[in-house]
Length: 375
Image (cartoon, rainbow, N blue to C red):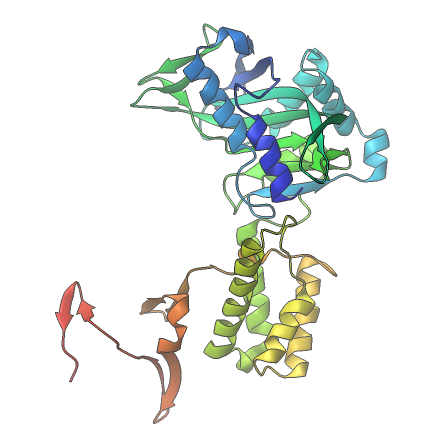
């Protein structure tokens, strides 16, 4: 799914637009026991509670594709035969299927290692997808997208009014001081909404923490894992491969050039409002390396090791590989942060056999907030 398709579904998740009639779920304690279940009609919640519920659901479709939102692929065999896929298909049709609901609860609570109590929240909707002509006139609907949305939210004490869940009443309330429903740790959409149509061969998984894709949970729910490792792991692997593959050619100027080129691709993609998710391959980065003077042999070694690490022909999100807007130079004892736009202020040099990081001082120079003079 691309950002536009995700955005279309997010915009539907509002009280005045959505066709969601009820939400259901359960409360699980830190011993993995279900201590309460609920099935709450949206018509019985107060306006502020309804909006808070939809805010939780919208959060499950937030973040960037390939970073917080991960594609979960299904094989043809899974779609035709697997019990996990059949359970999800039953739930996308109706949340009244008690056996399927219980199976999903079990998948989550048996594999999710939570620090405290949490809430599993389920919603289902049949969305009449509008069709538009070249003039952007609505020509009605030729597609009904039936989908399941699930999110898992920690329950934490709050000091200001927020959405809370009262286990003994089995319903949501606006609470202060009691356990409130926090933003989702993870969740998913099934099936995917690709090309604004149903794709039973994919699901979209959300994770708040880009260093954790909750692989145990996804394996239990989907019998599959995200196509790529967590975003934080991708960056760490990319940095390691780059340093190891080109060896002594991994100079400041090379890393700076890679940062600038990938940042430029991100900026250009955003400026052009491209609907497809921006991705690069190992070959793309190889060409970037060659363009800044890295030898062909070293650049080829990078491409080879990158394909080995991520998979042959893997599509990588540039935003997962670099810290856009950040350029940091560090030794074991010193750390320097520089605006990427002023990377020209730094250079490395060896003087009398000693390695130095040189920073050109322009404008006011301060130490601990005190302006100093440099002779």
